[in-house]
Image (cartoon, rainbow, N blue to C red; front, side):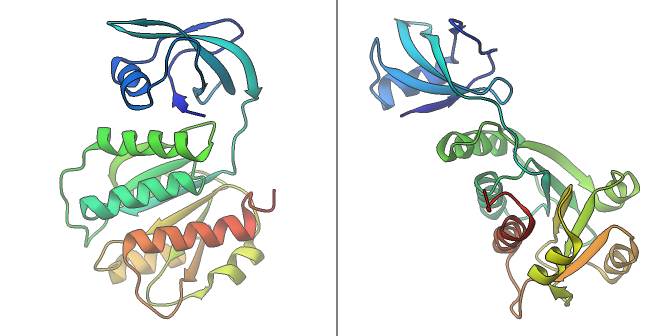
Length: 239
């Protein structure tokens, strides 16, 4: 069944107004008609089965019929990834959404090749990935920020999984030893972290430096590998 992320509040017998683009998607791409059903969610009110009650020039009108799943939230894991090339960054955001991250932050490091980032495009990719994978929420995508500033304002109680290409404890072993709780996974740029950044990261009390194996991985590949290991070790895959 088609799933759609909407901004509207969802409750029993509520009217839901998708955007014009979403309406066109429903009627022109998915070929839905009056009386057809679909699933909608907004990240707050669970998932609802809706029926198309009107098809207008300005869009379609949906009506909620029943809640099929109450709102649920996944484990508190965030991804911090250096700003990399457009295709790699979009891939990382898509796969991170599929793998259940709650938030994606874009990082500027000493070796980051700063470039324009289309935040609206990344938001759209996250929404589409959430719709396709059955998630009940969409991760936030944060604007690029300097690594030093993020570390200065670090959230108390949050662990940092520092994926260090120069070596560290095997990721699975380190994660199993550190345990669950709020985590952030940090992925560096194509040129790696600078010696100064690496020294600071390793000195922080909340950091767990890990290795992702004997090969140097691209940033987008490293993000997928690290999130997979985290979810298997301390995430929600056991459920």
